[in-house]
Image (cartoon, rainbow, N blue to C red; front, side, top):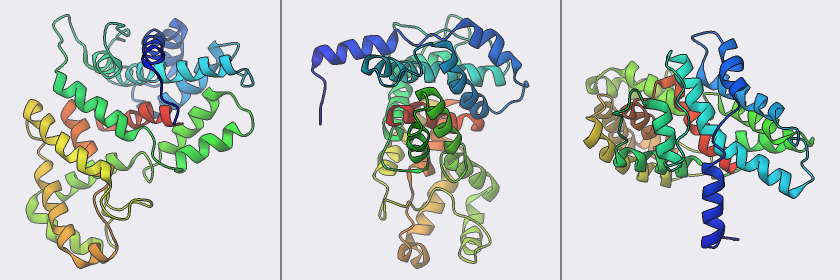
Length: 297
């Protein structure tokens, strides 16, 4: 209920923008210690925990100014760490943050910039911003609970955030949108949807991206994301898995089995399709969740 005034918002935006750099030792020594095909989320968890060792005031959690500074650093540096981990796994050179860009545009630039002629499409920046907002925080979930339990021991914010990110790594939490893509790819075509639905009803398959422990009707975020998906596909071209997803949604929403159990599409059902269309490898999906969730934590 305590919203910032214009001056506070301006200062916050400036501070986040100008704290995005990470220590050179993190980039040159720490990350190089990982195997070339390390999972980006495993790297993100480790790098977030290690980040606290670069700041002598990290454990000063009783000082309001110090705690604010750690919060600022985590929110500002999480996109930088995420992009660094992904580009390392892809064998690409690190791209430094650009203070002339906003939060989402800066992240996309660090992720995909190759050469001087790279330009960020504003439609894609808006979609990234929207997904970050919708993923930021919404309830007392597994990752948030982990964050609070670890923090209750008076651990530093970097250790607590790393623990929360580790919880998010699980396929029943942040890894759900990755599981949706694998499920759609496994179904293979629209013609296979009815048979897949029958196997789900028999307990032989899991329907990923449907149902939610809190939202017992439509997940309100899923409605917004579905609309955004079409805006992104107009720029990137249609994701070939979309047709399967639409058929799966249509079939499930007409079936009494799913209606009676209040199994409706959730935020994970369409977000993975957008991430894939934007060019993110599937291994990065959970990391993309962790960046905005850092704000909520």
